[in-house]
Length: 181
Image (cartoon, rainbow, N blue to C red; front, side):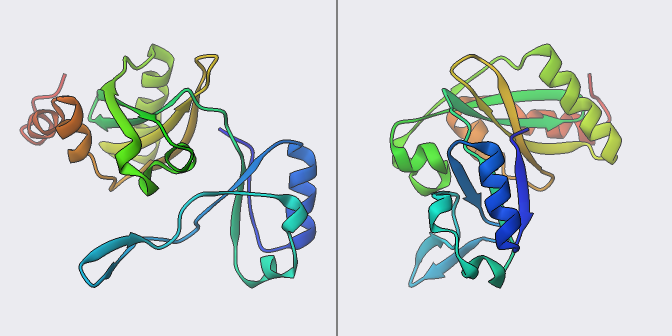
């Protein structure tokens, strides 16, 4: 996991930035999509921040600061029961590389084999929280290291299947019928 902090304390944010000593991003604590005259827009997106710009406005609400992870690509890993499916997202613009939800036109989709240690950790995560499904987000660094960002226990997965052909709907059906591997 990347080093992270959620705070509205200016001194804590500055101290965190000093400890990281590298690029930072700010992620939304709350967010969603709004419909503006038929056009869906992302309300809040992940963006790069410069600690030199930190000021008292940080005190107005919680901010989720995180070290910026260099990415070769990202993975939306969908877990259903004991099965895991790796959807690979290769971003081709700076905006998509920061937050792929902001620039869908610059994403190439593929599948990726999920390393055994990652699959095992995901299954342990599901068991610990007593859930059977999750949409997990990872970055894979240029050195091949998988970095966990988050699990969305209600995360979307249909687009992963639609763009990659992974049999996620079938896995849901198997799970619901009690026929899981």
